[in-house]
Length: 453
Image (cartoon, rainbow, N blue to C red; front, top):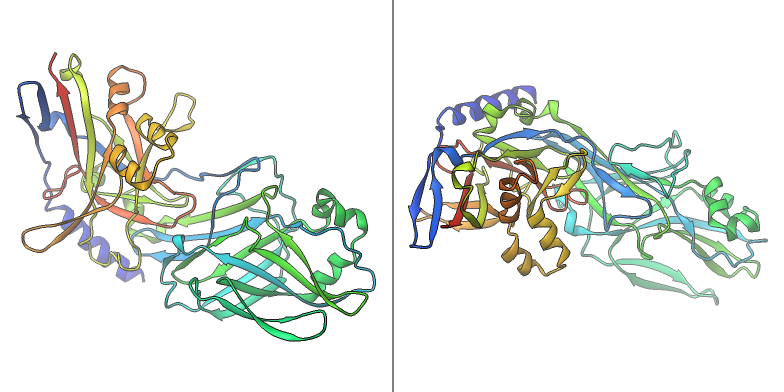
């Protein structure tokens, strides 16, 4: 693996040696507008940075889906995600005296919109651990959070393939003892040790009627998908995801008790990245290499930092339009874009004077409108687009509109630095390699349109 990575790095460096700075010039497109383009002084500078852990939970605010798995990428290195979360009693009105356990199953609802990597072909294992450390549902947590768990798993399933479009068939016993088959939504069902169900049904009435008391005894679950190059995603905060305790009541009738990740539960993904095992490691905080290649990644992965040029020559002009365009580096050796597709939509953030991350103004305005995808494409951009050239080659590129941000920079209201990152960074596993502002054929370009005084 090290030899392969070394050869890839040599190939990348050889490719970068063919690049030269690209000039940007001025074209007049009418008597009222000046389109600033191809002038050296408007060339942006860029580099790849490691932003560190990101926010994933802020006091009872859960995510729409959760990543679980591992990716090994020659360019981005090793990335993994696991989940820690509280489960709460959903039906606490029953008397479990004289009950006996049949089985316990953890049912996990798939969310294939964030599946990534080799999930269609790879056989996977999943392990479920018990939390031994409490999570504070009113606290804030970053993606670097971790909690003590049991030494051994309380449940597992081996050698399965994710089938997010295939309904699951289970056997169901009614109160008369008749067995029938039931078709349920696509999900992953993980057997849990029966002793867990026996313990829970033996809790006193206070623990089963007050979830805060229940969480003192059963603090939660830790989910780990063991894979080589697959990242699964689960919709956890939904009634379809639940830990089901199947038991027989005092009448020897089949019954069940459900525990779920609810809106009141703290559910926290934990991301880990080892960039040293990837080519990206040599590009982090290296503006010289950033002139040719840039990297951006979901989870707590790397981001692209852009620094704007001096725009004082146009200080007296009114900005009408500003856009940053950049192209995906699809042709790099060993860049497996079939396995690791580029980011679907890239957005922009900045760091404010207090060191807090903020959406740039253009993004904040667009997001506040809660519009459709078509609306976001028109007012913000950042979506990956394909362009077929005359020779049949297909280029993939992004165009992000940053007019309001440029205006704030010119007014001295914000610093002329921002970052490119996946729009859904904390719930996707995507990554993109981009050509930098000095690439010889497809340089990153800043396009500005001003109106004359």
